[in-house]
Image (tube, rainbow, N blue to C red; front, side):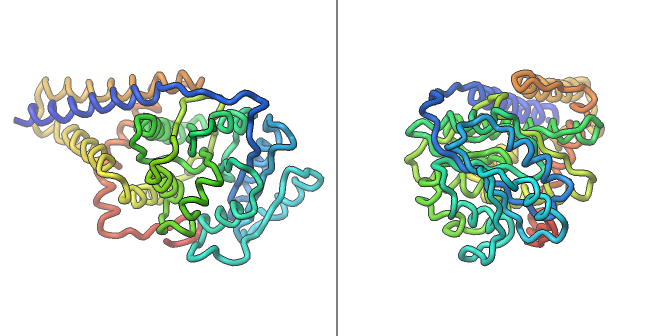
Length: 363
């Protein structure tokens, strides 16, 4: 009976991966260079003195028509030297500006308020966001903006993690797996999630949903905005697999930080559509079966475990290749172990208590 349940769950899991792959492989048209819209890049930074310089240096190298780009760096009441670093670097660079949000926009707080404050003064037709601990490619701005044909309201991009050790490599594999699922579902018309350090949207569409201040509060403000735009049923939402839109972020430095990151994402995931709950439930069942295999050991169960690991590997390996990244086998195996544990543990962490601690604030 155990093998039958395990095989049934893995069959559905495998079919699900195939569906995601079909979605992520979809291609989308682009604007020509003369058609590129005016854009505003927004970065919210709070106590990021160790990261912000690398981020704004990479943005300064962005290839885009000079008269069509502005970059707003929001110093979200940093208590370290973040503000000083920003002001020193952008001096004499007219495409940059920095602001400190004075008052909350509506009932907003934290990063969401910082982003909303910047969007209010943004001149660009298209808003792009990334994080202070990220490095963007020189083609990032141009690539995301080029996907905004007249019917497109939101574009997502892929992010990976910097670093070469096992801990960062494990996190990188997790990012690629989750974003491949996000891309696949979005491109098939069922948006489940996105990542705020690599996304773009029309300012007019943002205003149409009432901005962040018009949405219910969420610890994952990016996914909440995605859902609101999808609910309009008027605009196309796409998530192309494009290496020229790749962003590299810093991994969590320790397990404690990683725990809070996962909990924040998990709490945000509670707002997911029913399809999202099905995806999470199927993952929980499949991973629970793997953990139970030693207690119901058989050759069939062992083969099923191997099949699951191979399915995951061949699910993300082509994405790594397309993004011109290298997937190390040790990193993948570490990810699989980590993946099994956190998918099972997360419901027990977020259901009793939705409190999240992030960037020195409690939500």
